[in-house]
Length: 102
Image 1 (tube, rainbow, N blue to C red):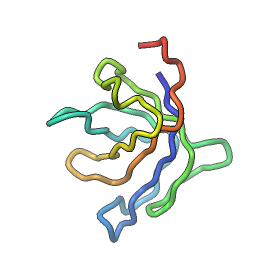
Image 2 (cartoon, one colour):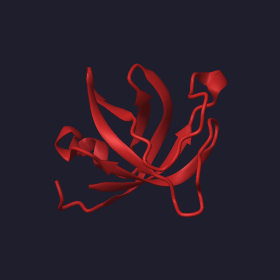
Image 3 (spheres, helix red, strand yellow):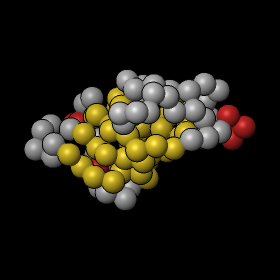
Image 4 (cartoon, rainbow, N blue to C red):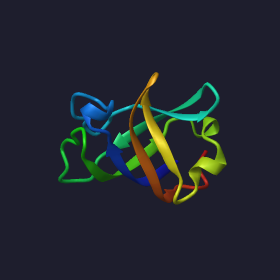
């Protein structure tokens, strides 16, 4: 399952990453008390990197859709982007693609 999102990385001064990300970046998304979903982020054509403090459209692939609650797959939902215990950004879901695939 894929999600079209707006991805925003927090600035380093605000607790975000200290380096840029590239397509294929695989952070975690908290989906409940102590539970995380694995995702893969692909940046759009023409965007090679996304630096702390920047935002971009992106496509998120849910690596294990069964761990990602349906309520978190709704357009408009804002989700944290984490690297284990550190929140490094956020994504807002714009569109759900491949809904029938799980």
